[in-house]
Image (cartoon, helix red, strand yellow):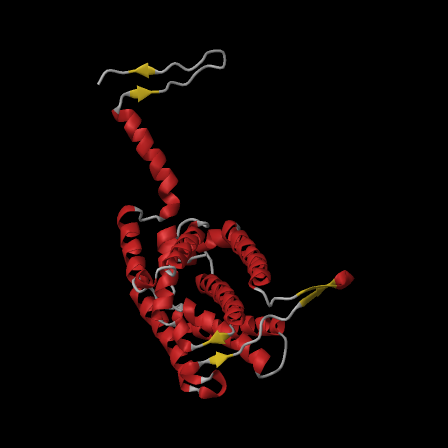
Length: 297
């Protein structure tokens, strides 16, 4: 979901969702599912307030403004010890509240396996929503705004409204992810959502490919798997950021559309090799088998 603007405020909304959910559970004594709703509402309110300002900017100005917004959010969490815990953050955050299913079956999220299935179900819901939005009328309008914002405005499309919707949906999804992450780690602090975290998110998108729906999924899966493999070797784990940077540079140089474009490139290389080798495969009629004719170089 893009309108042609690259937001650097994503990590800030992950933090907002995490803190909102944690405070709802720890300070108000409510369950984590109410905390999830609080995370979504907090992200929505902040996205609307700041979106009215940020979304009027374009290009480099939007990048600088969203980066500044992310740093502002981090500084607020550090500055106010009550209720955010300051630089140390919040600890001993409880796991998500158990779910009771009819017929007396209860799902408890105290084990990593149970949490894994919860996150899988949660991701499937978010991905289905994102897919429906991107492939529907809304996604078509977003693509049009990204390609020709002024033209869309001239034919009666409320460009600001559709930008706000995209910004709002992305912010709420980030906040929901932050809420689940916080309860899984049972700790949250401002340094977990700094500039390097944001860069990692963007590397996932760039390496996987931003023009296809599955591109960011591929980038996140492969790089996260690679990161976990590095943790097995303590000395290599120290160079994780450098390796991410190299991966981004190589991706931009050789796969500007991301790894999702690799199958198409391989097919193109294969066709080019066939042309250079002089191999042509003519189309065959239904009653005849295809003959391979070798042309002279």
